[in-house]
Length: 255
Image (cartoon, rainbow, N blue to C red; front, side, top):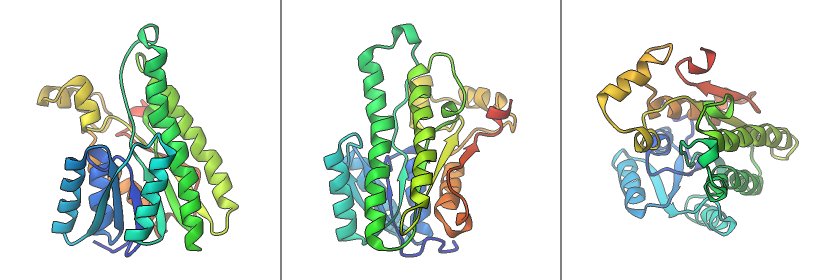
């Protein structure tokens, strides 16, 4: 590891599984002090234990990302236990596939609260926390390929991830005028083999092979590919990068 984030404090939401878990572990290996947040305390404790076993520093904070009070407590504990916040990875999200005609108002509100309200609060409170450090920082918004293109049966998900994409660009422009400056970029995963996918479609090799075959690069997306991209967007190698949509999807969006 290069120590690209040595001693920088980063909050990672949805860090108990999938992309968030892999990201928290990679950032810690790169020297970051990681505040892992999520709803499942047992899974959170497991992630922190994995990071500690690899010589890293991390804490777990229970977190409902749709609640501002929870966000403020996450920031407070992070600052108290780890130090001033350098970066935020707004990764936590919800996903379901349901035809538009069958999507209820409650369905839409639930996914909106997590994917949009949670992302909005993460940027707002992230800006405040980074400003207190007096040093530049970075925020990564995990949107989706479906925040760039449509997908039949996923109207609510596409709508909310499209909102995250737009939120990112506006926040990037505002962050560029701040003192200190905050870079804000969005990551757009394609089909990534995580519990979000397996919970909807199942978990077997035949399904993995089918997704891979439907991807131009003919490989299934893995959480570590997303973690690598997030590390780039957080680190100094992307010092001149803000407001972009970084699509990491094996070429699915180009097809």
